[in-house]
Image 1 (cartoon, rainbow, N blue to C red):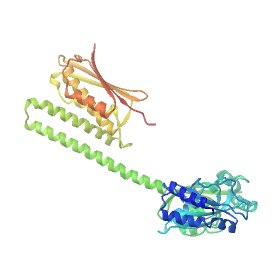
Image 2: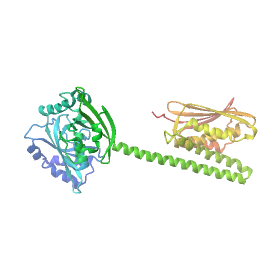
Image 3: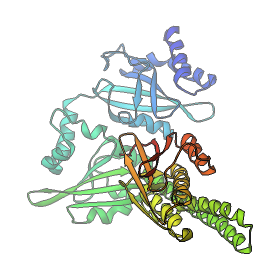
Image 4: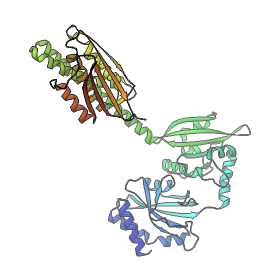
Length: 477
């Protein structure tokens, strides 16, 4: 092995892996014997190391035999290897165990017989894999494999595996573990993923003729069922699989079964974590709502105990702001489908009805109505929207109808391609720019500009006042 090739190994490892200098040196020591190994075994030999993310591997060294024809046309050093096409390599990385005479495909799509041995570092963990690949295009081997499939059920096997005589590759590269068993539950065929599953679960080698129940005794009852199709989740040594058993029928008689295992362990774990997080989030929302209502109750209690008349309006305004925020969490808790979405029309209606119908407004009759599409926004935006709507409707109730006995408020929600627009209209005395600024409008402007990244306008019209709030929004697909 040339010095330049040894240096290439170090460069690739430093760029793409998290191996230490000591571990890289260990890889380089193996590389020095790579050509000898290739010539001795008349096979192509490679060293793969996992990338930092552990999702892929990279070929850091290779040697083609001088004693036999290479199975590769082009060099592959520096190319990435993926678990879908190299399951044996990643099995060795995960378990530290070797795997011999596994059927695989080269990066150029040629079928080979592959053996993988882990390279252990000084701390006894896998720092790389030594891979040997031999040409496995012997027609007799393919014919024997096709014969095993045909005897089980040729027509159904071709349908399920997409197999043609000259292209028996689909079962070899798919991630699911595939078995064909006969009536006596003996294995007639298993793909590489199935062989790896047996090795990982049972530390045994899977061969044709083995009893399926030797490896999976708890699945015997499912295998013996007469149903044409059985789909069931099963647990094997703390791992969860979806098991499909498809009856193979030949000449109107059951000739065995086609069994597929799909690993659901990671999916079920994520579902469990999501459920725990959902419950936790719901509990947080519930506590926030209760805390806000407690604060509101304390304010009401203070008001009943007596406060100066000039302070009463400020207490009422603060109470309404707190209850508006609480409305967000009440709506979230009433939504069983999503723990973080708030329907904006329902929120505005709840706040508006609270402000308009909870007081006699000095004998005035005030009505309010709402219109708009059903839109959901995230809870953090909903709190800001709730405060803004509270201030705008409260402003109408307090100032718009001072010289009137009756008043009408319209709240209109509109949506375009990239924004939500909320219009609060009243038929009151009308807004003019000379009016004294209020704390409520200052709160509105601040919330819209800083929290919603939108803009706010208020203007008087011939019919009263229109306040317009607009902020960015994209409907989730």
